[in-house]
Amino acid sequence: MIPKKIKNFGLKGFKSLEFLKALALLTLFAPPAFSQTTDEAHLVSTLSLQQTIEIASDSSLQAFIAKNQYLYSYWEFRSFKAARLPSLNLTMTPLQYYRNNTRRYDFENNVDVYREQQSLYSSGNLSVVQNFDLTGGTFYIDTELGYIRNFGESVYSQYTSVPLRIGYRQSLFGFNSFKWEKQIEPLKYKKAKQQFIADRENISVTSIEYFFNLAMAQSEYDMAVDNLASADTLYQMGEERKKIAAISQADLLTLKLDIINSRNTLKNAEISLKRAMTAFVSFLNLNKGTQIRLALPDRPKNIEISVEEAASLARENNPGYLANRQKVLEAEQSLDQAVKSALFNADFNASVGFNQVAPTFRTVYTNPSQQDVVSVSFTVPLIDWGVRKGKANMARNNLMFTQISAQQDEISLDQDVLMTVSDFNVQQGMIESAEEAVSLANQAYRETKERFIIGKADINSLTLSLNRQKDAQKNYLSALKNYWVSYYKIRQMTLYDFERGRDIEVELRTKMGGL
Image (cartoon, rainbow, N blue to C red; front, side, top):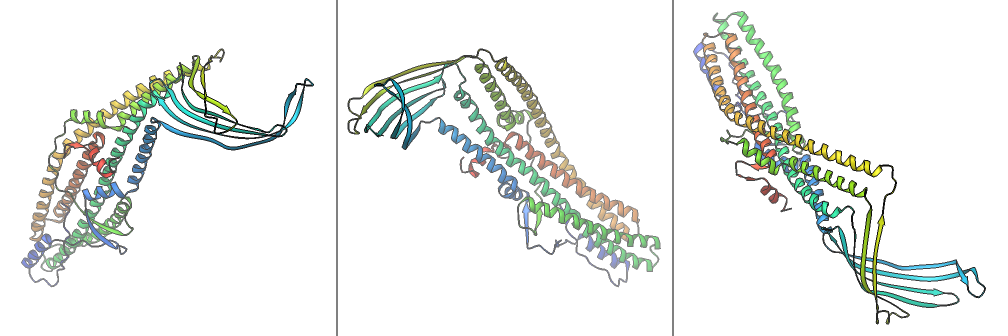
């Protein structure tokens, strides 16, 4: 719908008014060609709205940031999942050498004396650990081997081994971090995935803004070229008509003023076009100096979106709702931790296994004896001057505040969905009206121009008709822009493709390789 540029047919040496009229009509309907606005251009290409969105979603700096934020959350969730699996750990002290004076008891003289001691120590432990989410405890299986050699007056070596030991340890009444992580971490990852999709849709909205800003600048530039050509043609016609006294000197001067104004308008339009082009190319992260000619999207098909359906999809998919659930869960986690830390804490550890001590490595695993360990320890806060109680009350108040804030955020999100869907449904009808207005304005301008050529319309009528044509074109582009912005905002809020009738997450799996 952007007006075609009109070729500048100059009028020279006209002999009759009829010839002038015919040539003016040809000028009116002649299609224009796009001209470069910068000498630095090294590439001219045509982009549609969908192509612009695809390039921005893959190549823009915003797309790079969104992708890396998602990948951070992805590997964070992978780490959480890995922590739920058994872990194999090796702890070693390959060499530890001591040479020092240490205090010893002399039985013969019944006194303490300092004696030089030299010893070499080495040990290793191999363990398998499994966290148990339900209780917050940890199961472990391990094996140990140690070696010691003493030097000095009495030289001897010993090996100690724990061939197998099975144990379990946990806090009896304390805070169970495993249970809360199992609830929060999957929700965080789901929110991160939904946020990545929403960020891509936000990039689409931004792309539409840049696209139509450039489209409007190109439209105004084309219209400025067209108007300058028309003003020049009309002025030359006016000179011919002045020779036969068919036009006054005042009207001729007005036509000449129109040429000057059209030239100034063209210069301003050229500056605006350069700025819009630079912003557009920079946003898409393309080479500097690239020149783009935009192809406006066709009139969109009518899509009726129910407010109830959009609201339901938003509550299910929108990362804002998931973020509120995460905040509430984290506040509940903090309250649970604060309350339990205010009480006494008891730690339990129990293990059963075998151990042995022998002078040689060959015999250290022979006939091991049973090793049993059971321990319970208590930590009881007696006087802390209300510190733990204060932290518990703070956590409780924070939970209430978080719940209220989450409710307010959800109400705002519901209202945003309602208003955006309502705007979208209205925009479809406005595009039809804007198209009709463009058609009528173009027809009115052509007829007014014809009437001016034959002397049945004055300069004011022609100028008014031209301004109405410009306004109609701007209103059409604005309506088209508002339509696509509203549609992609709904997609951003619901993460749903209403044209294809499916979640946008399907596209995410395709683009991100199934992550």
